[in-house]
Image 1 (tube, helix red, strand yellow):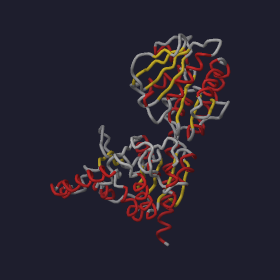
Image 2 (cartoon, rainbow, N blue to C red; image 1 turned 180 degrees about the vertical axis):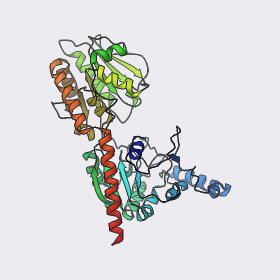
Image 3 (cartoon, rainbow, N blue to C red; image 1 turned 90 degrees about the vertical axis):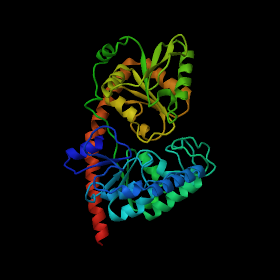
Image 4 (cartoon, rainbow, N blue to C red; image 1 turned 135 degrees about the vertical axis):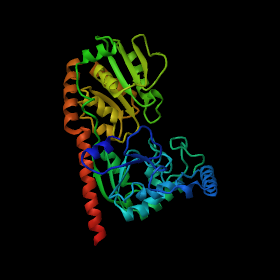
Length: 410
């Protein structure tokens, strides 16, 4: 939504097409509700029965669901063909990936990569599995979303490869890690150009403020040592690595002298978990607003972040923008945000002892944390402003449009 509103502010005639609409934004349109399309053929009982039968057949075979005929009318949905199509998430159960080949011959198509689904046999994140480089097959975990019932990962990846071999796309990502990964994948033959456009956050909301004032607003002890962990579903988020965080806290509790600290976990609900008499994990549940989340970032002494793979690291970016140092045990885009030793510390993933050591080093050094917080906020102002990201994305879309027409005119 931020990109849509940003494009409209730039004077672009933009629409957002979605599988399911929530809210009343006038420029957001579901694939199945365009006033410019006659949907009656799709509502024919025979067509619906055939489509349902095909979906069940594909699902039982472990094939990914491309059976979404509405999306084939994408160029008709707003009354006149668009000058460019910008694609975000394409695995939400609303898009037929097979249309990319034809679509990219009719208009320029830009892909923004937010996960690795296009590069593998079913999962949005392979979580360290390298089979996508070898054609998939023998999948170690079919339950990683988007989950499939049987191991057809090799066939799924082959279908994607055939689609991309016939498509001509412009590909961007928010991290260099994501781009480099895509350049090794079946997506590579389709790419006419690659572009790294760093992600951004709302610096009007995520900005530095007085830590004591933030704690007072949240009703927190002004003298406590507070750590913060933020993830959708909190500790249960399978794309993150809370197990390493918990192990690191256990190791921290064994160190002498004993350190007293509370780790707040945004996204998780439930009772407190005592790691020791001095270290407690306290679930916060879902944070009701971004403004309140920003206060938790400001109130924390440190953000702890851990993930096997991270395409950008939005939580890390938000914390830095609030002037909060980050300790991350991750790979991918999140590490690109850390100037190690300057605005935070980066340690290898799945090494709890290294993570515990980094957290201990900063807990014992308030002056160093303060300097890191200042450096973090300065970096965010320079490189993480969402308005700048949207302007750069808009400029690239204009550049792509010009290049595509120059290419097709030859």
